[in-house]
Image 1 (cartoon, helix red, strand yellow):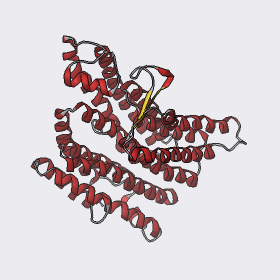
Image 2 (tube, rainbow, N blue to C red):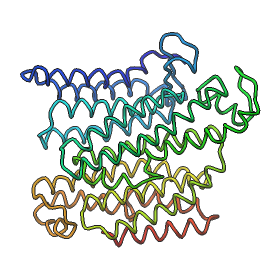
Image 3 (cartoon, helix red, strand yellow):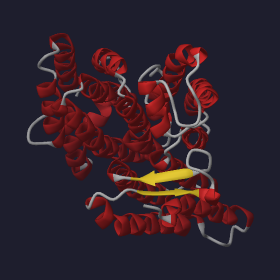
Image 4 (cartoon, rainbow, N blue to C red):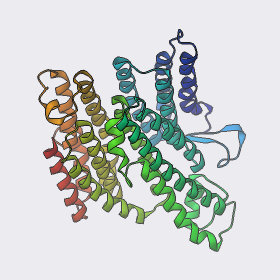
Length: 425
């Protein structure tokens, strides 16, 4: 059903971001923090208002300006999108409060943090690939600035690496968008699915050129998103997450890469790309092991956690790639659980670094008596990422393993990754 209000999920944070900039022009008006909080509470209120309808199976959509679906800026809110938005806001609040507490962040920081929130909401709600491209760009630019916000050498280099690889990925994605529009005359997920499965869409007949270009277009779309999820290539993630400001590390690992994964999930499920699933299964299993092997060699605690993000995304991709109901549920559950325990780990470690300046894993571990409450929080996150019962990581990983019974090699690769995860702590 049509609903104008779903546009507010992106309008509220984007408008609030410009309100935050007023403080830069007029320093006496301290509006950046209130604007950030107002954006959060208004977005959560809006999400709650849609909760009842979503629970009843309703799907809400809106195209701006009265344009036909697939041409105008369109958004769609369904059950998956509602859960994804809830995840974004649940991680955004502690990130925001941590930023307030740490201090040292000016109105520009909150401007880009709000852009990041609005961009992620747009990614979740977009139902055509061009508007998806626009919001991916907004998110990418905001993330790049926030990674290097403190202007430290390692952070600036990490931000530049992210920008270069992200630009490569988004260029590939845009090539895929162009090819699909040229061959189909539409950019909506629905017509793309019809084109891929039946070779035709209502607006245009099939051509021989389309038979050749469609697989390439699919590959470029998925490759472009793969960069943002730190699937391939994943080399930008350890530096970006390891040397970004602490709340940004939590946000990047907690929700930014998860939102991008949902795009991959949506494309593959809607287009029923079984071959892509197999690729994700095998590569995800390998990346899970590679990530944890790199984590074992780290002495910097934040870089260690960043490599674990690479490894845990491997679990998610492998579970989704297996294609079984149990593994898919496990992958989605692990996506949500990882968002919370990784944000918890980055924020707790970030607090220790903030007070002591220490990033060495051994030295931080030796300070547990100085920070007993943070130690408890870190332990909860670490036990979850290890998959120790009864923590949430155990449940999600168990579902993934149960769904991989018919794939012995990926199963044992993930098992080895689990052993390595325990050893790394």
